[in-house]
Length: 336
Image 1 (tube, rainbow, N blue to C red):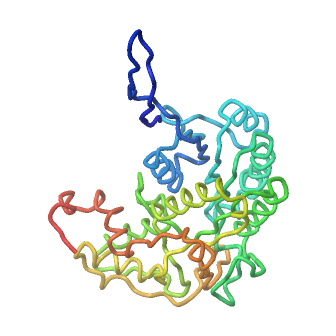
Image 2: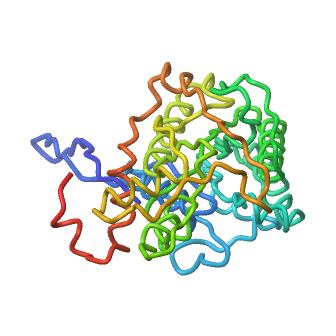
């Protein structure tokens, strides 16, 4: 992407001097987004493009034709990617983020969440790129919220441990890097199963005679990817101007909700029944352990004026789900 700018030029000709204003193309800074085909990556690409950046996105299985295909577990591929594109900023969104999948695919998770992050950090330092690593509230055990950036992590599951190791590798190889911890995310989805939040829509629509139980134990802070993407851009732009902007930051929406409460809100948003949804106050059998409440203290971002105000959950989730609603005209006909 290029931006139009104006340049004044002085033309000399016999007998006169003429001042001419010409349009020139000014190239914006370049950002490389890993996991650009994913839930957060797509929002980050859109946010930076809107902000006038040149965006290079990478993916793997879903990469072409829009994005570059890159296997992030291949060190040589990462090296070539950065040497050929020479980004000013790297936003590292790619990760295995499903705790229950992580427990059954441990080696693949370590390769992506830890080793790939380590390689990216090394190569970012070589090309002089600012690296922003997306991490998670699951680095905390959930026993003493809210958690500040300086609180000691104590992850309960393999997913949290892998992301914490990724943080440490990034800081070890790229001391000027940024780390942004975020909670469970939702946003514009290609399929409702793409996010643990929007997947609840399937339960909402099961308004049959049979009831459906949903977790009402674990406290979550569902956060819109558009807000996270805006924070990424603000952080990147400020850090390029001010090297003291580095290290760990927290960002989260403020609304505290269980999965049961999220589902009820979805039903309310679309005027659907919710009496078939029942709260479950027990730990689901067979799932990876999760923190009961890993609320993040986001004051560091706020003090630096780098935060954004997330939209209310009910309006943000409506934006995500209306294409999957029974009446596709919902967005034009329903007002909140």
